[in-house]
Image (cartoon, protein in one colour):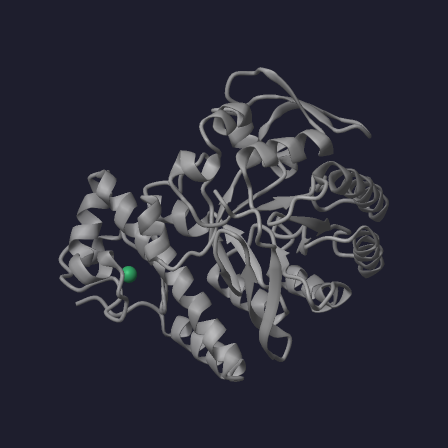
Length: 379
Ligand SMILES: [Zn+2]
């Protein structure tokens, strides 16, 4: 693709409190931070054309190694020209390592020092993931930002279990770095583990910094610990990470989780929530959550949000969206997903502007006030 000459790099443009605004340069284009990455699990953001995802303001997508290795297979995607061409998304792609989803989706898994063997949740076939194989798969996919292969223990877990798991992940991080090699224009991110224990988080961060990565993720959160515990970890954990590298909070989250993470120094996030909720009729707006299946919308000619510029709000009424959702029409998933992704990207853009202008606290107060108002009154 002729991108080989350019390198990966992060530039911090502004800071307001702990919140940062910046840009990640990649050969496939810039990523404005803080960034929200829509999830394209199986080489598609469900119900969205790639150009529509771009139109919502997304600079980067996330792809799932676990799903893509099982179907259609990383070697096949490589033969077909890589994931960008395969799914018609030319901008940057971040892939996860497959580790988290093996733990949450696969059947009959066995964990050893070497890696994980497991059975596919699709057809029961047997597979192995190791740091080396995860790096190979992510290279075959053509991922721009590659994640270390790690293990994420389910919480709650004892301190001893969290420490042992974290140290295994740090040994795997060193193997990931070795297997990744030197690939100009592509980035490898390390993943901090350590649960909710400050000493373990610091030990993990020090181990990762000694190996050296292009960016650092905070892993092992958004796994059921609750927002308060998650913010509690972020309050100290981002301080263990280098100032001059992007920080990625994996699998987050709801709009108020995202705002709280940015406030605590996170630069990148991903979550299936806006797309998945679009398919289940849950809509996020400035005024909180709207459930489009409620009968209160069936005669309502107003848009979801009069101030929103997405196609669902510009061209369709609540009554129509309610009707197509209740009728299980495909356009319902398309429109509600578009609105949700648009709303998430709008929040990110507003936060970037607020940080640049050193008014993040005022913006955050307005964000919470809007949500506290609740949805507009029924007609
Ligand atoms: Zn909208």
